[in-house]
Each structure stands twice: as C-alpha cells, then as structure tokens.
Length: 205
Image (cartoon, rainbow, N blue to C red; front, side):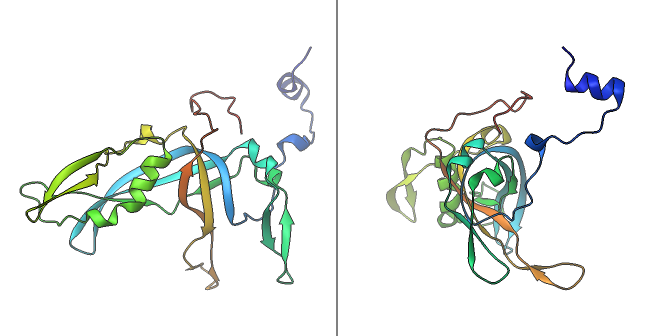
C-alpha cells in the first residue's frame, strides 16, 4: 500500500488534510499541559550590581489540553467567548524568562541577591528536582535555606510541565501600535506528565 509521501512524490497530488490544520484561534490566558522543547541560557548584569543567569524556554502544548474546556478569549464586542482546548494542541509558547541570581566568588565585583531566586526555586521544583535545605551563615547568623542547583539546558528539554500563561509586557510594533503577547509566566509540576525524548520524531503533541 502506498503512503501519502509516495503518492505526493510520484504523482504530485495536491490535497487538504484537516488533521494537520493549524488553529488560528488566539491563545487564551490559562494553564496548559505541555513539554519544554527549547531552552536558551545567558548571563546578564542586573541593575549594575547583580549577576544572573536567564533561562528563556519554549513549551509545546500537549494533546491532553483537549480535555480542558475552560479557556476563554475576548470577542470583538468585549465579551468573553469560550474556546475548546483542542484548538491549542501543538501550539508553541515562549516564556517570560527565569532569573537565577548568582552568588559572587572571591574576586567577583557583583553582589548576591538570594532573595530574588523564588521564581527560579519554583521552576526547579516544577521540573521535579529537589531543593534540599542546608545551613548557611549570613552576617554571623546561622539559618536554614533552600539550596539551588545550577540548571543546564538538558534539565529542561522534554520535561512535562503545567504552563501558566498570561499577557506579557506591552510592546510597540513598527506601526506604533501597542500590543501584548501571551507568554508562559510560571510553570508547575505536571504530576501525570511523562518526559519525552526530543530526538524522537513522533512526539505526543
């Protein structure tokens, strides 16, 4: 039996396959079951006194989003219009980025900002990685704190997460019109999610 690829290759058939049609429905604010498919890491100076690693990742919405029917988008008249979750299967969404404030070593000129690492700690937990408590001394006082691992790209790729999507910061296009784009603000642990191998072609999206 000939495959679709064989038919197209040898007979140049033009056709429409509804199963491969991509939805044009606007992304709704809400929580999406997804897998992280990409992660870029860079170091930046923050406010001229801190140093941080910034993790910018991208997720792809899992097919189980079809079981969610509580999404809603604003209609042209301003009312909220219900949207079925299956409109978002396979949709890719970029993140707002996660800051991991680094601790200075001997010779470093930047300052520590451990109080700014809550978002990073929450992301580490969402990836299923533990943050064991350790004892440290700060200004002569001993206290118990959460230790944080130095995550790599491989710690993100293929991980199942619940992606919490909301509107990003306003920005202006070349036409001068101010817009807002939905983005992943935070992630939570997807307990029923299964890690995927990003090298495999047939991913469950």
